[in-house]
Length: 79
Image (cartoon, rainbow, N blue to C red):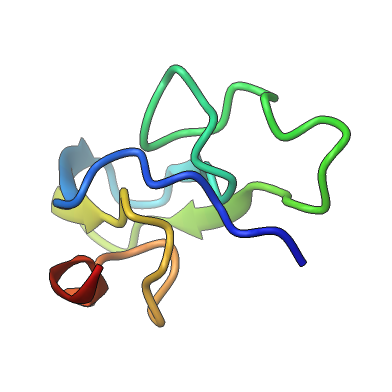
């Protein structure tokens, strides 16, 4: 399996709406970070669906190495 591109070494804060679905970029190639724009085409990567449970800020992983994908778990600190 290929390694994802590290978009940045810090999470991306996004205001999310309860019940709304978001599609997180797992490959790191999207120009619309942290969300998918289809740049994964031709790779083994696929977007990860995230449905917000409540309104508020969500911190999406931008290093693409989180164990809590699509949310940040601090893995960027070790990269």
